[in-house]
Length: 111
Length: 114
Image (cartoon, rainbow over all chains, first blue to last red; front, side, top):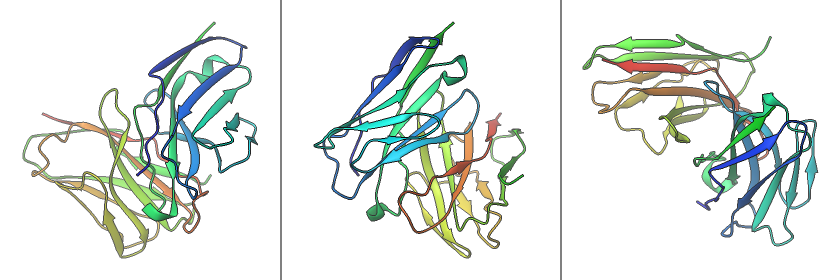
């Protein structure tokens, strides 16, 4: 399975944007890029996903590089409730759509 | 409200005992999954099922067993053969058939083996 690389941790101030990078240099043409986040002591929740084009939803934006070897999750105005571990995951039909979670990026938001 | 329920939230067992973790969903999802999470680590897939009466091993299936007799239910049994069962266990479900389908997770069961 193609792997992703994320920084271990990032810090942000409340109401400032957060840019979470993810490298996936071995991504294949059929891999979708998914982001999930996990708040402390809870199950993960879906954030956003994309294939080639940039995507926006109510939670975040996903910017995908033209060569698809990297992507960035953007939280436009961080709140204390956004403090969580963020996982960047590649998902493909070829592996039964399984999600393979790495260690993720721990985001800390300062008030 | 639709969602996934896992019970109990905390579970304590003595070493050598089998224990079954419950997972129920009312989202009408075909696919269900079990993950294990150890402190400071990501989730690892134990078993998954794409349809009733069928399931596949994930990355760390040894010492675990599952059944899928009903669409709504996917119980996980942690057997005495699992060498280090203390962990946070998460169940998830999703619609089947598309790579874009998101997985919905339950609140988890924290198992401690004494």
